[in-house]
Image (cartoon, rainbow, N blue to C red; front, side, top):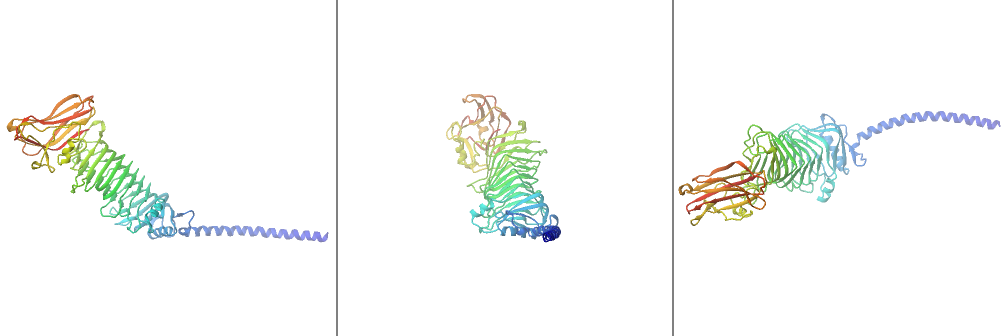
Length: 535
């Protein structure tokens, strides 16, 4: 028993001693574990550029300064390169301002930049570009596109101190290193020219961004690059204070702008090559400028729907659209608009469109039908020809009512290669022309042309331009002489018929008739720049 008791006592004592020793060891272990945890957290922060947790990284480092006081260029670029080298992923950018004085390379085939909190990338360089978009490695195009479509820049404010620089340059090297299929979403670009699109760039997207170039370029696509500009999409963005919001000088360039606002810039769109398409776009400014300019080989501006608010109230002298023909006759500049809604504060200029380029405008609505401008100086869908080519003459015959074809007379040219001559070869009635357009009640009909005559006054003859409104069966509702010409006009004279004539109730067509009386062979009359506007 004693042995048992002694054994029991000794065992109890041994157990108590072990218990005391265990408690002491646990406390020490806890303290030691806390120290190790702290050290480990510091260690993790210091090597974030090489730790990959589900391909997500946090932009941190000893030389990456989120306060914006010191330059972080080299450290940020090294971070980007390390992530790209290790297979790429998402870089989460903590709240702060990151200042850099040299361009940063962004690799759309490898990394995404996602802001967590309010993030500003501030470029302090005076020239060049702040961010160069280009691929990290040389890939075939399918591999590149597959990777690039997975990445984007999201939620970052890009600020440039110098107005002479560009924030983004998208440019590959034509050796399998592309700059395509990138996306910039919910970002702000402020302070300088914003985005230059150059070689090996296509399928790029700018979505839900605020773009304020402080008088510079918003989107700039120059001439001279290689394989670029195809399908550039701008969606739900705001352009503010642009010198030129969108500029396209690439013959193969294709920029589409959807649900976007262009506010208070000098010029909204310039197309010197390629195409720009506007769909549900709002444009507002108070500048006495051509807000839209289309000029150059193949340059085309396509408008689906647009609302224009003209707040220039000091007597506009510049047309909102300038469409000038290309020097190459094979393919001229053009403007096509399905629907324009125009609101004006002051009196608009005489014309909405200036220039000899081809213009098609299907519909123009103005606020309370006030201050309606004449659509175009030269050619639009509501005009029956620019009088300057065989095609224009043939266009006369494409309308509902055929009639005698006027004669091209190359000796009396005005703006183009020829004018339309009304004359006779034998003593008889002069050549006539009779055309119809669809017209609704309340539409306003206007006419403009240049005219020159010979021997009308001398022979006491007349040339009449007549207007008839017709119902849906083609029966006449009303008739009126727009102009009776009975004088000799030896030099080209511009004629604008004002006021506009409003189509009466029941109107389905308006008919314009041009004809003379019984003429002798010495009488001739020339018309050019004939434009009929139905607004």
